Image 1 (spheres, one colour):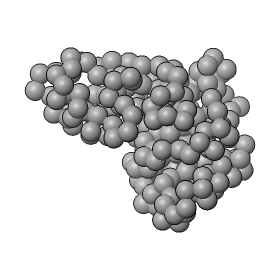
Image 2 (cartoon, helix red, strand yellow; image 1 turned 90 degrees about the vertical axis):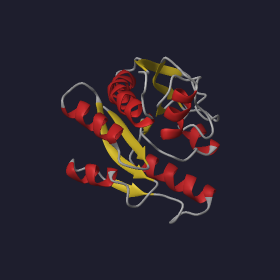
Image 3 (tube, rainbow, N blue to C red; image 1 turned 180 degrees about the vertical axis):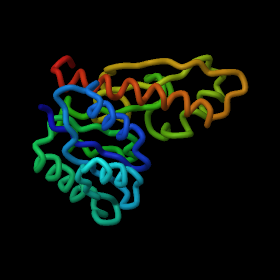
Length: 196
C-alpha cells in the first residue's frame, strides 16, 4: 500500500477526485495519509475533514523563511512515510531540496498540453486566457513528474479537449478540469501499482 500526501493551495477539486477514486476502487494500493495546504483557509481542509484525512498547514504566514518551510514540508512527508506526493493545485514552486528528497515521487497536474502554456506565470485562468488569445484549436491537461524546473518534468499522461469558438476562459477551464479529474487519478493508480 502506497502512502500518498497531497499538497493543495485552494479548493481541492483534484484532491477530491483522488479521494473519490480511492474510495470507489479505481485507485488500488494507495491511501491518502495527509493533506498539506499552503493556505490556512483552503477549502480542501473541509474535504479532508469529511473523509477523516489529517491536514497540516505549512504556508508563508507560519513559515516565512523558504528553507524552514521546505524543512517543515519534508518533515511532514517523512513523518507519514510518504511514497507519493501529489501537487493538486499547489501554487508554490518547490525548493530543490524537497525535489531531491522525493525525486520521481512528486507528480503535478497542469491545465495545458505541456510544453505549451506552462512555466512561470502560467497557472489557473492565465493558462486558459493565453490558449484562447492564441487561437488554439485544442487544449487539455498534463500529469507530469516534478523536477527543478517549472512544469519541465517527464510527462506521465495528457488528454486533450477542444477549444470551441467563442469559449470564455471559464468555459474552457471547466472542460479542462473534467479531464484533470480523470487523468490525475489514473496516473496515481499507475504509480501505486508500480507502472510508472
